Image (cartoon, rainbow, N blue to C red; front, top):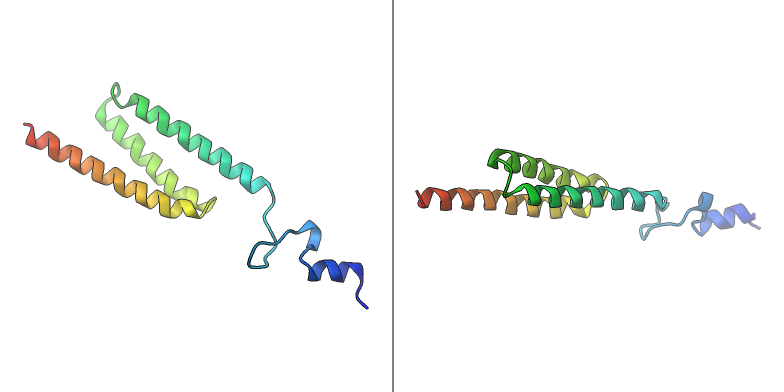
Amino acid sequence: MRSCHEEALRHGADHGGDRDRAGHPGRHHGGARVAATAGAILAVAAAAIAALARRAPLRLVLGSGSVLQVLVVTAGAIVPAMYILGVIFAGLWVIGIWLGHRVEQASQ
């Protein structure tokens, strides 16, 4: 006969533990808060850079936008899907800079 603790462990309730699909102990709800906070900070930073785009010097906008892209990719440490999304958007950022440079060169 198993004890209550053994039954709880068998069903994935070790130390209050919900389990993920793979059966590993689940994360605490604090992880969701950290992800939401990081996402909100990145979104506010993106909005601020977009607002500065017309008024600030080009080098400042490109530099801060590039730093933001690196931060979005590194957000994958918190939410793994951000590695993929960050690389996609960083690629679009680089293409946008390249196309902007080509258009500027063609107009001169």
